[in-house]
Length: 330
Image 1 (tube, one colour):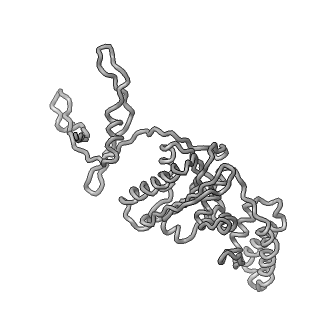
Image 2 (spheres, rainbow, N blue to C red):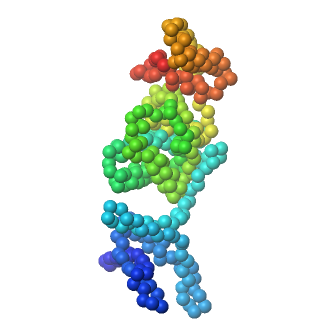
Image 3 (cartoon, one colour):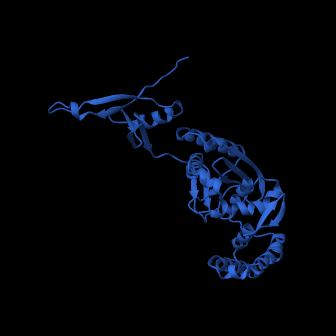
């Protein structure tokens, strides 16, 4: 068996050693290339034969690329930048998805929850891919963990014959779907990195990728699908994301509307009635009265309100305790 090895190097012009009237000499420096990138880099820098010229010599077509050399902690790194050929496509927010099976993804720093739905919006199956190490590993190890986790996600999706992926558009701020712990974690690792890797690998593998507004996905999943399909909060949110990519609107079930019209409404009225007169006249009391009044008005006119308004009310005033909906204070 013959083992073929290759040596990679970079050449740099050395103007300090240039003799008068002659070309500047080159400095040739060896470069260590990770084994998994060797074939890709060789194909890039060696070019592709596309024919021969009149003299019978091969004509080589090269792909444009840029080389950057950066110093970090006393070591030098070579960055090779080039346009990657992709087979997938990113869809516009209003563009329909042409696929039989679609995967919605709820992306978190410690896990990626994936739910597969049919093009009719029916739940098929789900799986959670954990990456808890991202919460505490050093920055130089995060890229490997992200890459391996995303690779496992797409290996599963390819086995399940999924043709499109729907993810959250992280440009939208989503205060209602975050908590203090999440905000602390984003200080160490940006959710953006994980999302970008999912998009890039999906396009490379030929998936259609669509981004949707993440508003109330966790709330809808928790109250509407978690108990119905026996899913976790993140899996049910991924289900909502996948359905939203297909254009489905998440209306409240009748039983949830009844809870808002009865229990929540009575709860808000009781809160207004129990406020002390001195507090009502204070600045914070005035704001609270205005806020509760606005919520009561939305409940009265719920048929004219956007369904997200009702999901917001449910999120603000209700919580699930062992699958039982209970009221909570503002």
